[in-house]
Length: 349
Ligand code: MRU
Image (cartoon, rainbow, N blue to C red):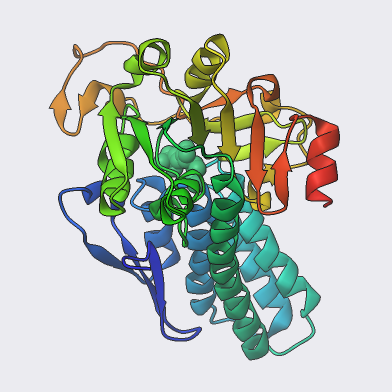
């Protein structure tokens, strides 16, 4: 991988380096993250973003938080681990991968709670590293499985960034495109700019162009028109949390793309690892939706674009109902039709 999204330096007493995605595409800069507070802030301000990458960042944030432990004995350590996880869990609410990673480390700790603190620290570090390496393998698998859906001559459309930058591997929806390209298929991709923070314009076009995939940037408001007039043949997007019935939360605007795709008979695919499913939620109405700072829609990258005092509403995600999704590509196979029964059958949790 040329520019890994996140790198851990050293052993359990080491630190993280990650690409500050807020600076892309202008500047590719790695920043050092040495405390749990820095990791929290990095996740909050979207310097690292995308559900699987947030999961890996949270796992390494736990390792950083654990390094601060100065207490005495395993009982105090267990409380410390719980506290670090609770703190990191307040950074962003929607991507379930964050909570999945925190829960996994908490479970690891409680399984070996009787061991020495030093052994527990090493085991938690190994667990965090495993989350990273598994994510890399899963991304490849998603790409391999999803690429079968891409047809020669396709015009694909994607929203937000579900690429390498959003994971520690090759991405989810974009991994499908990378694999299709590697297997020699010819296709083009329309990329929604993805307001308000422009993950599509800033990150997805950058990744696709680096991979020499034919990418065309469009404004979000052009997607329906593109489907009607330009022959968009398939949509691939990522997800931040998928309920047990297949309703899928993803970057705000995804639902609108799905509505337009259904109206034009364009197959709409979600590509996501099993760690993005939250089977404790019956349907998408139960998914917590992050609301972001109104400045993100009134002061576009530092330039005021709305009157002072204007009222705002800024949900960062929306939920696409399962009935609008043709299939969900997972590392366990493709869920289609999308229903609670199929989700459980394919994932076999
Ligand atoms: O707010 P963001 O940039 O973290 O939102 C990211 C998305 O919505 C992605 O599409 C999603 O996390 C899938 S990542 C493979």
